[in-house]
Structure formats: C-alpha cells, structure tokens
Length: 82
Ligand SMILES: [Zn+2]
Image 1 (cartoon, rainbow, N blue to C red):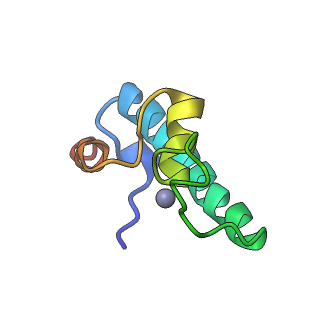
Image 2 (cartoon, rainbow, N blue to C red):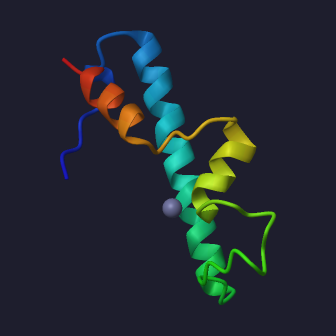
C-alpha cells in the first residue's frame, strides 16, 4: 500500500475530498468490525430485506448519500496527487 501525504494533493478541494474518503472508509470498516463483533457477518437477504447491499456500502449510502469506496472514487483520489 502506498501512502501519500494530503499536502501533496494538487488542490485544496482534493485535500477535502480525500479527508472525506478517509473518514468514510474508516467508518465503513468500523461497520464491518461491529457486525463481526456482534456475530452478524452473514449476509442473509431474505432475513434482512431492508439491507439490500453490503453493510458498509449501505452505511455509506445512508451517511453520505453516495458510495465513497468505489473504483471511480479510488481513481479520482489517485489522480488528485502530484
Ligand atoms: Zn465493505
């Protein structure tokens, strides 16, 4: 994994977007951690029809209104650095 400091972003807007991506990714993974701790790792679409997508993705949609951990966002993040 390559880590690039935020100050190497091309614009201030890129820094803000990458901060949001980091926050969202951290919270997305916390959703999985909490679900695993509670023994809820199984994805049973019949039992939980209100959760039509992967739990972390569902969290992103509820909290941010968009999926931040997507291939498009990853490409955008990589292009935001010098
Ligand atoms: Zn996930």
